[in-house]
Image 1 (cartoon, rainbow, N blue to C red):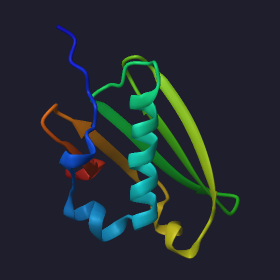
Image 2: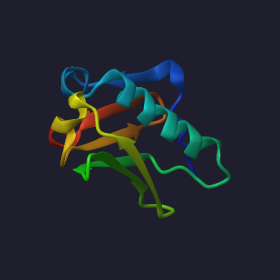
Image 3: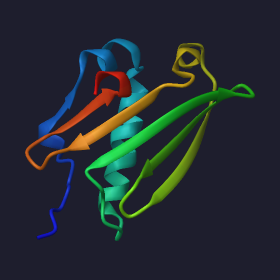
Length: 107
């Protein structure tokens, strides 16, 4: 039986690490990126991974999942509050009953 991971908006949670270190607009962007994946015709894996890199006055975010393999890349103009995001990795995990956004080191 193939489970459908939907990352429902009504059952989304953040860890303390996310709420204390990740700017709110970036949190919203990550949830929206997951929503786009869910709405696409491609199956959405239970684990969504976001990696951040600060380079050339830009914030670069890669979004990937393993099954099926998907990789998307995004770039933003670097703002002062984004510099601390360099080398950050964030997971968004759906376990059917709820979804949680957490820093990789909180896993």
